[in-house]
Length: 331
Image (tube, rainbow, N blue to C red):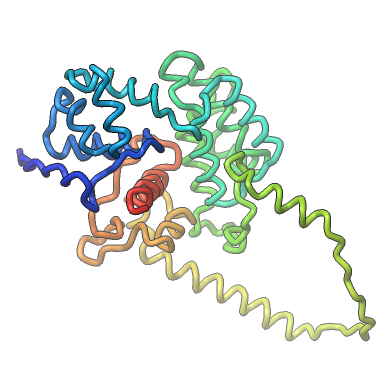
């Protein structure tokens, strides 16, 4: 068995070191604990170690607390959450998750792979640890996740779910959230013969509550009266030959786009379990790339992709969260 040598903690204040300034506590704790684990530090060491990675004002407040002089890391984290609870953190409740799923069902906006990612992440945030704490049965969570997808996607994936279950899915025995997400991702597979590349250009997104900032702008646009100047032109009948050539050109362009992805399809399947617009989006965003040396999909820096561990949104959600954390530290 190969032993991995510990990686020392980055020097406090250095570019790679996490720094807590009183905001986004949970993101800081995730980053700090990951570095502490790599460095081989024990939980008993963390209450005092964490002070070195806090701003002066935060450190002066916490160091007076007895929990940061002891060895109980869980108690120290509770104290930090008491003083610095994320203001943007929503209270996780059963009613809140049910209301969110119902709103998303009515809006029926999960119509692209990007919208699916946004929905899965938003659902996971509102779900929190409700199931783990026994406040909600896992079957109710699975039903809510399925219903929140909206009528269009539910109708599209229902035959696959029925085949998977061997019978018609019922409320008392629903497909799991992971199974539903997998089938929904496969629905947007770019190698599917029914896949429409133009659907990925739809910027409507999942229209989750996280995008409410655009509502004001939409209202202003709706309030304006669009004046269209009409011009009389002679009606012309398009030549059938021209229409045929245009149709062939559009089809050829779609085939060309699909051919570019087919060469890497098996690599994508190994990394994500599906070949979808979400993988292409990650490549466009510079988060992943294809390694010629290993024949696999890897991070942009060449390291291995993180395991998804059943997390809604898969490894795509993990990479985007890490990108947000990295951007925060660089700010």
